[in-house]
Length: 536
Image 1 (cartoon, rainbow, N blue to C red):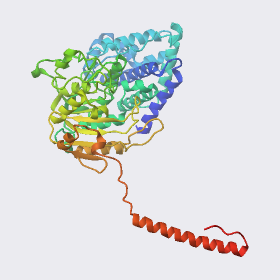
Image 2 (cartoon, one colour; image 1 turned 180 degrees about the vertical axis):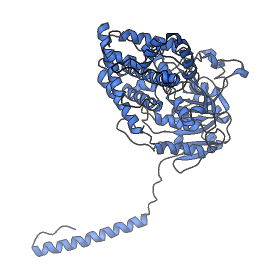
Image 3 (cartoon, rainbow, N blue to C red; image 1 turned 120 degrees about the vertical axis):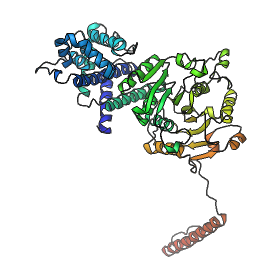
């Protein structure tokens, strides 16, 4: 399916959302829309696998019978259901009961069946607790099927759900059920809802163009990026994963078989559920990812809290877009926290370095970490200066990339990407000033593929380009008191051309001479006509 058709599917779904959400705000309706799209994907994938598994035994409904084929098979083979579901768990890692399949749900919607609401509640509960080997408790917790925004009573809510589902079913019926197509449509919708949510969107969405830069960097060999991507990344982490778009972008760039396991952490419950759905909808099996709901700064994830260094989990690649300059309340005892010890605690006014040090602690010796941060981390003083100085002296900051302003839904400020490594081959720091390479938009600026490729190529080749990229020695950085303000090292300003005053003087004299000649000719004509002469 072409990119144009994929985008068209996204636009079709967004149009349905815009038309149907009524009294709901975009954030509330997002959860319904994305959950139904998610259910459709799970169902189509499951039914396709069931068709392959049952072969010639897969029933074909009689003309006019709109029941799901699996409903017919279950009814005709009750003694074989348990063995069939066991086989499906082994092959596709989950089971969906026939009554909860999208084809069954959309048929209920078409007939405006009075049990739609109860059927959906049962279906969501089954998927959360029984479909997968690992439970996905609370996956649909943000969808309130009893919300008064859907209707004042059961009948109204049931009817509204039927309308929403029927419209979605009609809207996507003509589009491919291919995983990449649905995955891209899902990402498109997340982006559209993010744009409509304004500042709140920063909590859950990193624009794909920026994700592509971070992903393109961390998949490369950490010591010799120019040799290309690593053959495999065993473990990849995003400790502020939002909807999971960054992690999925890494997986897409290196290939599904190039990643052992994906790890993500997210504090916001709505976004946490969004991330889990997003993983499954993109074909990541439940055994191939682990998303934790918790507070990164408090480090309440057991697998990241191992005190024994021999058992510490380490990651081959870490990507992150944490909240910018988040206010936090570090407790005094946190100064002894293994993540911050030796560096110091980030100030209460901005947790940027707390997030950075958290991720950096878990980075493997041959790994690469790329994190998006506000420019303030490059030059702010106090404890942030001490942390930055130690990271530089210990040779852990590899690359500093300045991006254009107004790329995010949540803020218009320009941001930077810091690339860090535990073991670094080059003793200098590469600065890339990409602030002026973008396409201007009405509300937001955008990075085009060539802009993204230019940044990644500059990093990969570690090449220098006038007014764009430069390798800066540690001696020069030390002379600047470890200030990493990008414009100090790579200025985009063009030098003014040297003015030749002698030449300018000659040109002015020549212009003056020609003006006098023209005036004399003009006055000659006026004299012949008997008209007053112009002063000269």
